[in-house]
Image (cartoon, rainbow, N blue to C red; front, side, top):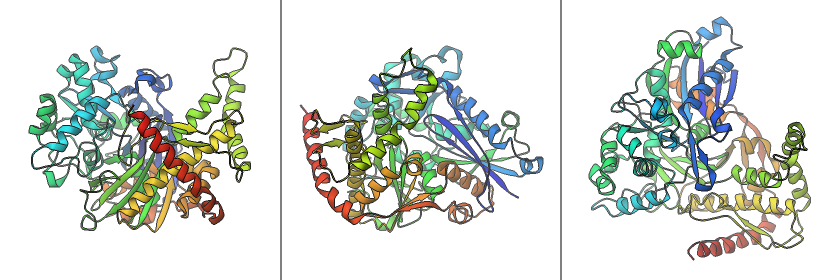
Length: 547
């Protein structure tokens, strides 16, 4: 028996699964929330500042792994061969010369700038624009050609924003690292920033690493923006590693903390959506939609099949991302599940914090709210109301990144109620997905199959059926409840030598499908005029944002 552990570091929690490499059976699992994040410490939503303390990762990881292995027999515990990872990204932190995140040092323990800057942190919009201008006009090279306009969510923008606003962090930070690189470094004891493992996923999609450039954007180019960035680039590994690489072995200290015996292989890592695509069974011709707080659309193509120069407004392309040996194609929406969470919170406003309502009653109301909205929205089908919504509540990621854009409603009347608004939001999310789907296929990428993973895919038949109708394509829902963690476990299986490559691991460890949604031709046809309304509203909102 060979068992492996997959760790998925999400926005709210760490999920761990213990997987039988022969059958893909889940032998144990655990989920642990980030305590400080749950209290919304070190965050300011109005300023789009979202930070994670590294202790949240350490504590939640330890708890989740111990929960996942608690039910194993002694023989099964001895059969754990390796551990693999995925995390959100770009989620970056300043580290000292030893690779220790600054927030783990006493003088920085309450300083948000010294913590991990979460993927959804958009406080670096101005720095992203400045970087974009420099990367675009550098003589002889457009460093944006494979990823498009540089984003406030990404590595260089967040680094620049933090060190410009915080001189203490600038002085103490020897380097900056992605969470997805720091975790395997931590567990293997290989934390030297100069030689630390850096995965292809984050290096390509977030830091703009590409073989055509010989690596990262040139230090000379970055120096024109801020000399500090040139220093950071020189302390970044010259070549990233594969998600299936063996980074090292678990240190004795971490073996004791996690309750894992023996020398366990510490495997490589990736961004969470990429691991979810692997866990779902991505291969050429397949589009995987990872539907979480945001959405990520992923496909893989051979490098000779596509040219990235003219496609960066539609999606990003990174070498060896998602599947080694392929170009990883990534697009998506910056808000998906967050749209419905926002609407639920909006409707719960008068209940949250009300002294006369018990927490149990409040939880009961909140738990069933979206289900009641879906039932009511389903009953509305076929009754036109002229209402349209826009899904840019967290800006627009693709096509053509613009985080200054806002969400919107059009056609509100005194007869507009919550179910009608919810239906409009669901359609807006689906229409935003349709724009991305059309862009991918118009670029010549052949897609025969769509697979969906994530909480929404598992829990919301209404949203998934709407997506199938809008896209006019069947959507298969992965049966893997923790597809990202399963993908990370597949990385571990390859890193430990159980399988020769990821496709082999996918064939043996894949979970199959829980359900397939077939498009309803009549409903698909009836939604086409609403899709045109979506485009009208999008054009108006984009013009309004420039005023």
